[in-house]
Length: 237
Image 1 (cartoon, one colour):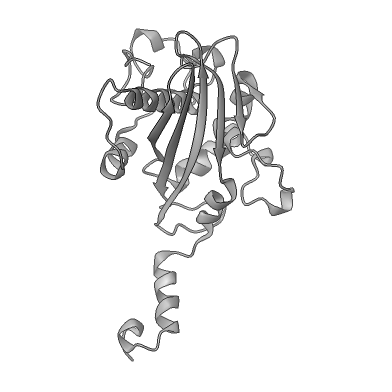
Image 2 (cartoon, rainbow, N blue to C red):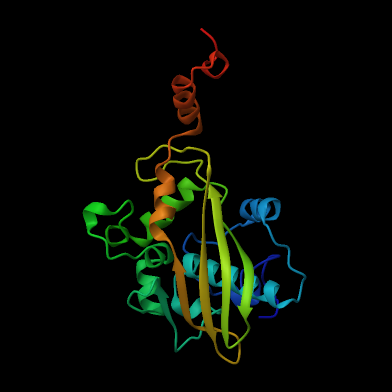
């Protein structure tokens, strides 16, 4: 979990000779300047460099970056190259090849709900459409932080927070400009080189997706004003 060369302040394996043959989903390494700014402005914890929490947070951010932006499984250096699986909310384990084929967003949002009840249907999305959907909804990115670490290697259990601002449309729903966030718990099972062998995530999927459906702030304010008997709230007559 040590800081590695070729990264930014919070991630490893982004740049340098080790990535010269990496195939990136959009042709080049992603730029995290905007989401790093959001993270630094709104994080609730600031971990000391070299602490267990900081190392776990770096591993999490690196793992997420590679899952979303590296096309080939062999380019993903934060996971065990021969033995990796991912499980979300107790559903079927997915291999690294399966996760890469369906995309990180779709794997993370897997569900057993009937299609007609899905706000977002990962089975109907491609890697490209899923990536575009969330990059459009969150133009400043979707920040993530580690809140607590309950145990260290080889079974790293931690609580995390994921958040961003819906400043773009989402599946036909207009942007409301508000913060969209969720909290969850993850267990990273790692090998002796601190590469992830199994990732287990637990979070409330329904509440997260429902938060995209809130009325825009301006509409919500207008509704509150019209329902109020106060002429100040109504803006006067």
